[in-house]
Image 1 (cartoon, rainbow, N blue to C red):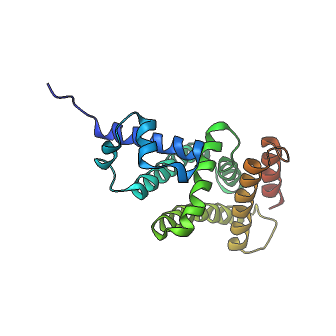
Image 2: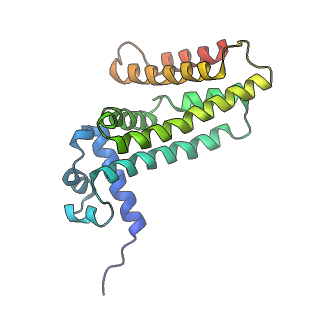
Length: 194
């Protein structure tokens, strides 16, 4: 009797393997052979689920972003304005093992996106969603009278997103200079200053 394969589950396994290879060894090491080996399958199995390596990488990035969106939805439920903004920004920092892996995955895509317009388009679209969420929450905070500054919402949004990216990189690259508590404190102070 032929084995029944759950194609959705197999695809998730392959994407999980891709994510593990990227986070552990870097995006350049995420060859189809390495991903298949990590998942415990032959290299040919990947061809049944993905057109090429870029599709695997894009799918892994999208899957990671979807998990982040799902988690954030729960964290900000019932919150608005600065309270929701604080949760959103803190959640985008590598403050635990899971978010550190997400950040390493994200950062791994940055350099490759500079050389691949297809990856860059996905990166821009995904980053655009985060930017829109931050700007919307700032708008809510302004409407509720929570903001002490009259800076433009666009400027505030860019400042906060740059702070997320910078603090994330510093925590990953310079662990002796900052720890997770420092990063959380710096982000919280930035929100408090608003």
